[in-house]
Amino acid sequence: MREQFLKEIVGWIIIAFLISLSCWIFFVYKTSEEIRFSMRVALYFFKPYTVLTHVIFLTILVEGIIFKKVNDELYAGLMAFFAITTAIIALLFMLIPDIIFFSLIFVLTINAYFNKELTWDLKNTDRISRVFAIISFSFGFWYLYWVGSPIWLNALYLSPLGLLNSPTLLTICGFLCINKVPRSKKLEIVVAIISLWIGILNILIFGIYIDIVLIIVASFLMIRICYLNNKHIIED
Image (cartoon, rainbow, N blue to C red; front, side, top):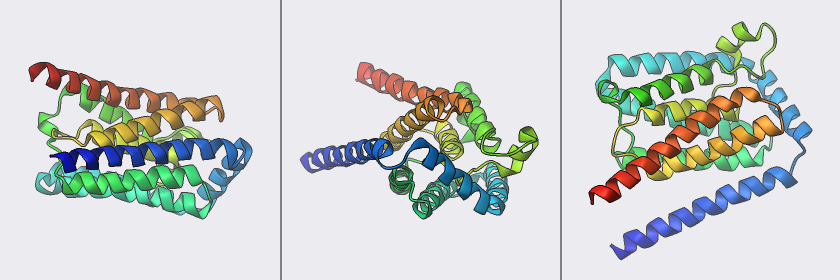
């Protein structure tokens, strides 16, 4: 019991350190103009990949609905895949905060899967969680930024899903919204905190106002965690 407690404490200390380090690096490593340039270059060179990620997302989402027995593997695998590919793209363009953020999410996703904390039963998901999941999936898939005109059309297959931070986080948040109990608090809290941080920065520094959706969804995850935690304490 004591070893498990110490393990939890060490885990949270490492997570807090990595998130704090990433936030600090953001302000000292590159200017906002350099970050914006790197993201545009990444999207330019990996434009065919964005089409592929849209196809992969739709295919796996539908397969998970049809083949319910394997949706845990499909959805957890897709979450891990998007997290690691975003980290790799960030590595290629030396976007260090995103390297740390998405590597951390990847590790926590794999850990949650093997601990049976990433499971889906779409029929027994509460309505409000499904609503937020639909919002997350819609705006992650159809992210109205970083694409040229006509934006409404191009975003359907060229938005940087699995490539840049916000649409990838929206998609991961969507899967976490409909993830059933028992859930990984570490994964949900880390994803929510990172999403809030990136959403706020993107609005204030880059003027990406569509990220208000990311903030709303991340806030829902945080509120749900706090509510369920308080409910558990009261019941105990």
